[in-house]
Length: 266
Length: 287
Image 1 (cartoon, rainbow over the protein chains, first blue to last red):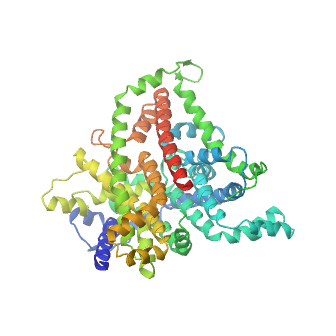
Image 2 (spheres, helix red, strand yellow):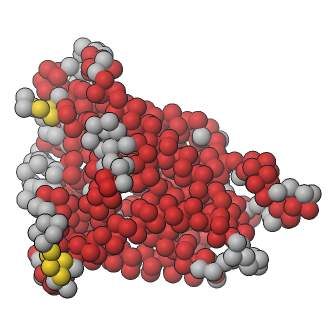
Image 3 (cartoon, rainbow over the protein chains, first blue to last red):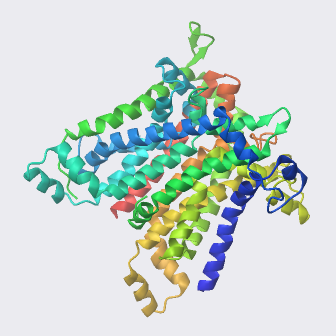
């Protein structure tokens, strides 16, 4: 029984890893080798594809732009979502249920619907091609999700803690930052992870709202296609480099995420 | 739980409300505005009422991509939900291997959407990709760039590769929440593995699975980037889903009026389905 499970899981993991392995190997090959023969290990191991990226500012600035607006988005999302999630978990107020559902519908609205008006709105208020503009646009789907996740974690903290703190003379801001936030730190970790993930993988809005100075790496990658064909090696290397930040983040928050999953709230 | 009633809580929610309203309400109103007018330039515009809606509802572009979209989202759910549950059941419950398999499963979720397209674009090619090469080597004539059925299956396989992990991780967290006492009671009763699954695990997974179904339905219904990179919607229109048909219309041909009407209809469909799911979810919570 257990053997069967292990084999089944191994087959599935092999299915997940094979395409990634292929991309990784291709990034170490020269274009002649990629197009010439099918090899499982590069005959001629080369870092040339990575050097192309690291020595060209228009390439590596793409990564910096992406990381910049993703971090901005994470900070903004957490700053506004924390108090809101607290309100939803602790109080009833006029229109709370409707507001909550309305927030969730924004997580469910297709970005393609908003593409053109977004472009016009952000151009008219001077946010086009800025990092903060992309970060604000990504708040549209990240803030509702963050409120949803955080609300779940906050509801797990007994209300007696709030009341005791108020009796002890804590003001709301002091209680919130000194006592409450440390209590839900693993929830904040999980939320930050999801914000990172959804903002990092999104392309459609980020590409539409930028042209030069805030251009994300995903949009830069299209330049590997030129008149002489596709530069497969560099494309693969760029792809590998977009996966790395995600791997690093998940490695650092693995304990928080495992805890979050154990709580049954995602 | 009885929560105190306090309308001051609105002050805590206000930043979220303003931030989301800025990015949601203004663009939505703009789209509604477009969908009701015929716009030639900034000063020349006519109110046309529901004409665009009537035109777009009879437009074969919308109808075809809508049918393709429903078939696609349906197949995605039919494959990914059972597969995800299966993978979650096979995962080690605790220890080092549990953490490792969690991390490996999370890996595809962190790949940017266009890179997912790129990975499969490379992997499926008969000349340089392992998958395409292997299929051709065993005698299957596979070419996703020319054959509509191959293209369609590749998009589906790509989505399964990318998103089954989400269902698996959700189910895994649901399974972990089941107390050991349930399993002990089942083993005393000599329940078969199938009975344990059918009468203990599946009912306990219901609420997490609803979240999974909801997220997978929504995201597959909005899919844009992956097929765009992989096939560009082709060959022909075989992998052109709703988002792509809409973007072609709005940005490619600049038919703002019909595109506005298209957007509203698209949004209403999603809203309707998400409301159904949301009601089902909150009802199952109340029980």
